[in-house]
Length: 159
Image (cartoon, rainbow, N blue to C red; front, side, top):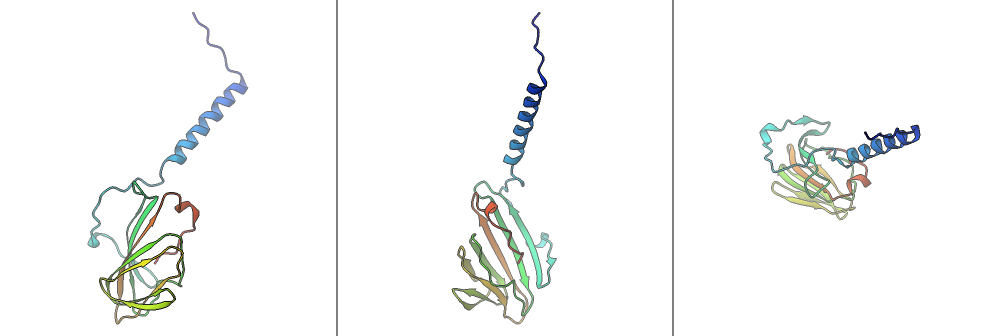
């Protein structure tokens, strides 16, 4: 019969540290959220959460098979409200006006946009938005984060 050698305390500690380190790397390698697959997001089924300037519908904010994160929400700004102070960020952003009238700060000037307008905010360019119409203004916001960029920046305040 073959005899199994006993492990010393030092060898046992080394095995334990190695196992815990490996488990830690496996946990860190897992995405915090599951990869988003094809889906339909019904406007009527997404709850509108009141904000101090109007309301927000969060459609999704999740990693995809090619992006660290893809985010889409719809914001409604009440008459005369501002989304937030002009700002800039490294990620690009696409905004589609659903209803109402907004003014967008672009290239140092405020420009008026109505329903159906598509607004592209380039990386690291100062931009802002305000409702200048007679009623609420609603718009969809799309942001995407290429692999590695999400970890390099602070989160932007919600719009």
